[in-house]
Image 1 (tube, rainbow, N blue to C red):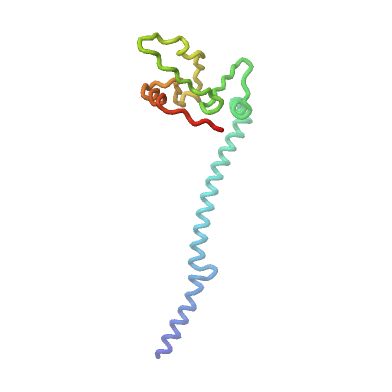
Image 2: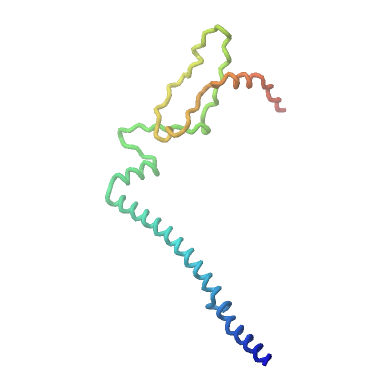
Length: 155
């Protein structure tokens, strides 16, 4: 009788193995479900991209406003009567800021202390950038820079 129970347990285990670990088993089905979910997410992203591109094509075919916008943004074109002002970022081609010497007490400020160039007209892209003052506004910063020793000379 004992050997009959062992045979049944082995028979049940042999029947359960393909259900769990076989080609179409529960583990393979779970892996396929995860792959399907990942593919659906990728398809959704691609569908949004296709919709955007389709809208761009429709705008370019029907309206001149989209063509003008592309010509301005991608090709740098301007209209005949327009004037283009390009503002460089502060790190590219910018002049180093000049720190004026502290005037003696009671002395009148020199006319060269004021900036010599007029300010450029603000553009929409420059409106979000913080202003960069040409001079140090803090007296402690000027005093701190005056107390630093000069850097050693290079051979």
